[in-house]
Image (tube, one colour):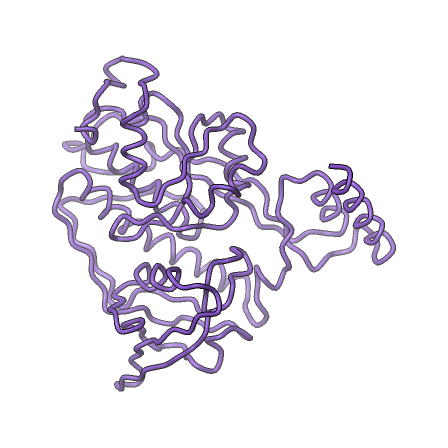
Length: 345
């Protein structure tokens, strides 16, 4: 503890010598955002709607910081200090970032509906014809290899019909690995080999440096499902959306009477993927009174960094979360929180 405090003081002194504390720094702060109730945001037809427990997805704030804010965060903790170029790469506007995040959350919602409804026993279909490149980040492995408008249809010879499938396939590699992408470009097929680099915002996660959307994305559901996400963007709420949809269309309270929050991407096969800002999201959940925080296994240690009494539960798949909740002793035994919710069978 003493060494860390001395390093923090040294950092603060260095800042004071380099720039006035009110000056804009080359850093962003990632700070706890909030928890957002899912039950009230899931919209399904009245005839299939069932009472729900209290579930929430979580979010973080990303903000440009001056040197005083950076120094404060370095000393006090509770926030990540990230180089601005990692949040807003050179040549990328904030509007482009916002549009990408909106596109990612919009695509995560129908995938969540597919996973949640399948878990509830419904037959649903999801399809796409590849991942279309929307932008290429300068200085990343894809720069000079991929082009805007390219449609990536496979990785290492295996089909990648959606963005989620492509992202999850890349995640199964180690940072520095080479991958082979099958790309449709101007009516011709190309096999392109490129490397991977560590994600600036999620160290240890391999990326190639493109933004993508699913080409000819289509989901066929047995009934309409909608989720209101306010102004939150990105794919990291997908897992909790799926869990909330499952709870909304099945009898019983899957939360067993607890306030359950969480984070994680969701794949069409139910895989829960890692996200950025897990530590800050856990703080937000604890601050809002959550008792359980579900998190991708890769983010488990990070999520425990600053919380005190919040139970952190690592999962690899949505099935893991359902099994965990089904095994929890119910907090209450009212009609709204029966001992055996339908998913617990």
